[in-house]
Image (cartoon, rainbow, N blue to C red; front, side):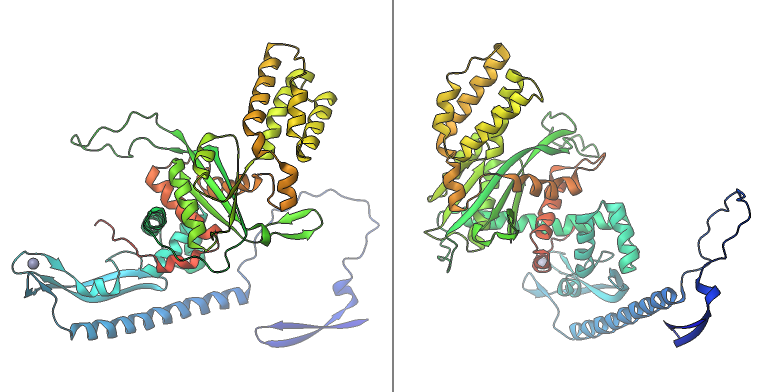
Length: 479
Ligand SMILES: [Zn+2]
């Protein structure tokens, strides 16, 4: 029996005739089994032919791009040389010197002759060609810097550099990636701060958004699982530097996170399983006011806050949340259901025993009643209980206090009917994506500035807005 097999390969289609023996596997042996020592596995002597071809084509293509880029750069430089000299102190500047300046692009290194001008009066220097191109000698180009920053936003710097080498074919090291993250991240944090400042200002008259949603949900959480932030600089500052506040080295700083979404956009992929169409993450290191300024700016910037928009704030019992939620005039405050249940569990464990069926039944009933909006009935029953010891009594008191304080934020039947949701679970998963996935790996420590820059970039990425980093104004690096 013969069977034809067509192999599509580099050299056109090849037809090979196979006999039965070729594909039927080895003949079965009736000889007794002999145990043989395994041979060491080896890799193929070389990569498949087409892998080589594709690799070669990429290299050649990159070199063509680099040459094209160099040619365009030479054109721009020639045009620029023909324009008038820059002015300073009311006079034309002198040509001081001319140097070959190079920098790294996504396709390799390019270089160009650059004139340095000097003011005859104040001695100020300028290299207007570099200003025009917005590049810096010896550094990554803006295009490459944003891509390096993207890799650095996803992976630790050394790994990011390795990915860049393999995927872009550009030789960079961890330090280059780090620098790009600082540069693009600094621009991102500055833009974010400016936006917050703009929207927080009482005289800002942002136009009333068209088609603002009827409801916006803002779930907020200060995650105790923060990150380690260095209190001291890596290098000891000079003797004249002001003393730093005596904070313990490696102190855990809280990161506060907010998730904004429109309940109208929630989709139900399968019955009972809701997933959110679009969500916007906001985060900050530490300050509650800063977080709420950012939340405020984020909803206004996206046209989500109209005069009639109901803002649903979901949070735990932390006062910092409820004090600041008052900024939203039309609002609905919801105590996160899972935090409410944690207090019930704390009492049930002590009263009925960890993992006991009684504890399970007791808390399940509480959950059912709370979801039915019967917080008053629950409270009335809690007052009739007889705790078995002092510890149990303390847990019950805490539970009663918590529910009494937040009773108005526990109308869960109503919130579900309105489609607001009752839990802030979205914040915890968001928080893990924003912070843990990148900033809390083994042995990682951050300076406050470095962490803020990276967080700002992660928000661009996770909010699906990375493309906007192209329009950030990159700060100049200190030489
Ligand atoms: Zn001058």
